[in-house]
Length: 137
Image (cartoon, rainbow, N blue to C red):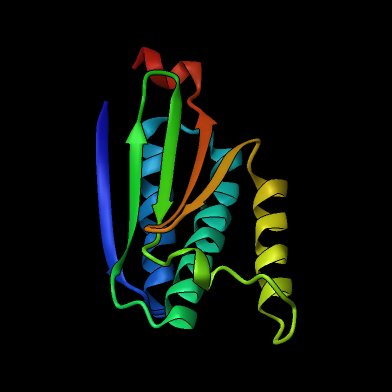
């Protein structure tokens, strides 16, 4: 089980890099080519959400992305350091709508999705199957 880990400052320009790395690692792990766009989009959405939560809450910590090649699944975790008080609870300034839309996009892209939030931050865990042909190589 190999893991690639990225940590980046919560700046929108780093989201593109995370997407590119995720697609490259997913391809190498054996994720089917037809699913790579979904992986790229899902990582972009999860990282954009984390960056938004950091910026909204004035959090200076890093966003962490872990890409793990498991035996039959490719797992991606996107972790933010924004506490529960930065997760939008009212739509007064549109933040809740943006957050809800982002989570809806993730739900549509990823079959195996888990979203959790706590006082120390949030975690989005996503996984995709690895093709059987890739395992034989």
